Image (cartoon, rainbow, N blue to C red; front, side, top):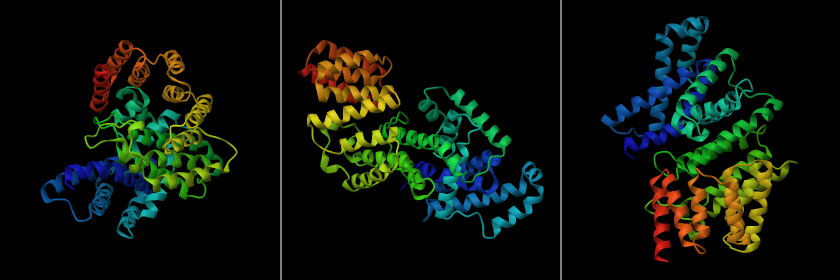
Length: 411
């Protein structure tokens, strides 16, 4: 793989590992320095690999450079030296023998502890998630702003304040007690959920499906499942949800990168192994006495892995959406419920419910209305498709809508 394509992929998978290990080793008060070292490591890779080619083991190359940059930083940075003067010599010796531990086990432990450290209750929930998306998931400022439906300036201020809080409170990268784990888990899971969601339907880089983000979210969730203290029903439910969705990745996009709607998907492309894994985690998610939004969404995703268009299937999905909206309302869930309603009870009833939502800035809303009106009122269907086209942000979405409009006019 060429360097210009490999480096963005490695940045997604390795940046957070380097930052997590460094923060575990030196403390969260040095988080900005850890981010700088990780960023400089990838800058060195871009410069070196463009001239000399990609090394045989690029991940090991990154880790070696990160270690050397850390060592150099400790030696030359007077500010850092003054803060930890008694520990500096010890830190340098620790790097020489046995070195910063970048083994898979220590990386997993560091990232697990980092997840909970960044979700410390002294930081606001939005700041916890923003910081986690930035440090653990490698999100850009614009991507975080999109996830929160806000602007980059707001996110930059939020991240600055959160990092200041980490330093002031001297928060350590370590596993909290059982009661604190429960308190922080919701923010940890929401971060992973947002990471997967951005990959599943991305507004960044004009690419609808970004598998690298989805699989990174699954990897982080798997770290939680593999740890006894965090192997909880809600965590298993989230992992099962992601497995079910990921099982249909190869059927969701055609060779041109265009989205294939559910009804047109080739079920032979569905990954049965991932469906089975999802079912295994879903079974383990049933061990608790509470149903979370992830349980309900996993149930909906499981139904979509069953290729049957019976009224019973869509009625089951509809009821799951009803429960989900009662537990936690969201416009996206309400819109998806309307589609399930159309399949279970017919388009007329679905149109009445959809128009009550009035999601004026959501192109999916007008796309759905266009679909629902297609067999009933061609003029209204076209009107809604035109609104959807005007609001669509990605070229892929625009192409999908234009094709629907063409089919509508051809009758």
